[in-house]
Length: 92
Length: 92
Length: 133
Length: 133
Image 1 (cartoon, rainbow over the protein chains, first blue to last red):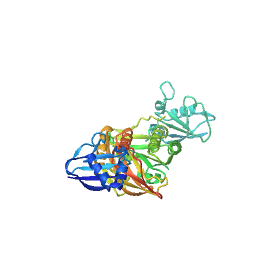
Image 2: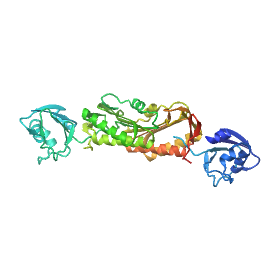
Image 3: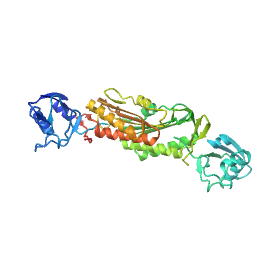
């Protein structure tokens, strides 16, 4: 299935602002992030602690709704879902 | 001696916005107010309580400096002084 | 800059004048004639005394809140509903100072500047009850 | 009205749109690129998500503070020192509500709207550390 990935600020510079990722079968948010980490140089270091835990400045939205990285990484994505990745907000 | 009297808001409507008052010899602020009360219809009722005390919404300036009606009514005026009379401020 | 005049207030020009490269925040307040059953308003000033009081307030605000600029304008004369009575603009490095400076100037203006308003309605005129002494 | 766009913010037009005969107070905030040794700024938005978040914040402010109007604009793209990043305008019957509404929208925007700033200096670019999560 195809998932659209949007990335902003520092993560936009690493991942590109928009890309499509092809995942096999059912896949969770965590699996999508792992796939990105395996194909995009620099993303693993930027997004994950050396221990493999997601860094706490990584913020995520699925279909424009914020998800909680502590609880929702196991959420199963569906064809056409959109994941957005960005650092803490700094507007205004 | 001549004193310039400026009056604003409701007091401007009673006294006129600007007038000159001729006083004989040394005269205090109180004497100037008494003179105005005796020559301008309506001013006594507007400015003084029936007991003769200045109403507490009468504000005064001599030469653009506020004076305290409780303490400074006995202040002696000098030729060319300017007295301003007005109600509580309501700008903004 | 301080202005007390019969002519319309140009808030836009005041904001342009208050902008600074070293300021990150510009806060402005505009007071207008509110339609609560009135036809208009008349504003009277003890102009010279009000100008010097507003300049004193402006300088206090500049130093207390480290403002980079502050502008105050107060209209006098006959105003229609919706027209501007007073405008205050403050710029500062950061938003807290700009908001505080604008509030300070507004409250001090109301309590210290010799200005008066009269509401004009079908029944006649009524001086707005003042609070500042 | 909410606007997120690359074009210059017209605070004056926003203020004109926010004026109401039933409002006695219009408060506006303008955030500008402050010169603290930078050459300029780049502003990035998750535009659709930011638009709907700002509209939600605007409606919250309208109802909490009984505003008569509220306008928000956020610039995106490349900005020079002194240019406007964000503008917020609130009108209300009285000054307290207009000030509170403007502060509310500003603080909520900073913590909830998906927007980011990058400072550009001679040494390169540096993303402004965000606080909103």
